[in-house]
Image (cartoon, rainbow, N blue to C red; front, side, top):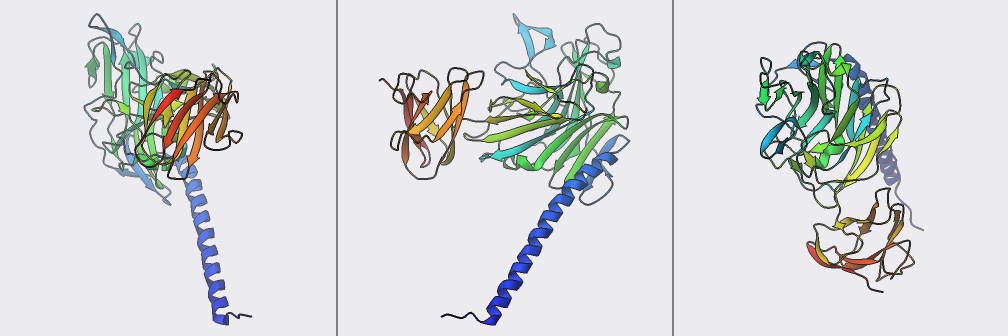
Length: 420
């Protein structure tokens, strides 16, 4: 029989206790930080300017603001025979997004957007985070009684410029804008001062939240939270009077001005999008585009619950539809592969490897109401796999498609139609 020295037992016990204490402290610190965040939001500034609060401080401290940027996060103008119309609209090809809509009798006082899940985001793309009111949301006193005038307000974090701000728009106001506003066709726009924030890598989006407050202590507020630090820019709520009409809001990650306005994420990237609103009732999910910038994510179905909406979005590792006539695809990285396709709405879909037992699917899912489906395939071997995607388990049938997953680096595989 082998005996351990007593000192070894003592060391093991001491080490175990230390590790347990460290674990408990870590859990406690994380919980405390979350509680701190919830508490300090109730002490938001009641004056204009820029502010910062660091855990565990109990108040916001004023910091110097930077001047408003001279560029806009605008909607591209609609043109008819080369002539710009009075209204603005999203640029062509913008990805459809989801928004939160309140019941008819309620207004949004605040909204917070965050990502509940961030997976396989490996590329750093220039991006913005935006909470936006609905475009052409309605008329307020800021329109100065001009017929047809409507407002739009954005709450923005610009990663490439490392700043947070608010942007204001008056649509169909005319060519003579109020003092301090910029003219864009018959629209007028201006930016708030900005608060300096870190440039946050896209892979760390799970650590970020952005909030928008309408008429909080008399002010509209854009707030960014990152790594237990909260950054705030505050301006009078009377700039647009959003709080009198705010009924729909959207949140997501988008492109930035000065680029192609599309946030391009790597294949296989996945985000769980969540938007909460403070008005005490269950909202509705509505489809819409509330900004001119976009991203390359495919959106899954939106779900409304409590005071929030949620939906998942992903960049497919492979895209194909029924029927496939032949195409070439690339896989940028090994690991988790998202295979997507189009089937009959509500149809059952199975994805299996023809090199393995076809009765054991890699993934079993169902197409949504629009016919879109996605399967998450975790491939942990350095090899090529020939996969089969079938509707209703009809392996080898006329609706089956094949594609090859090359997990060793930049693989190329041909997708082809399966002929029974």
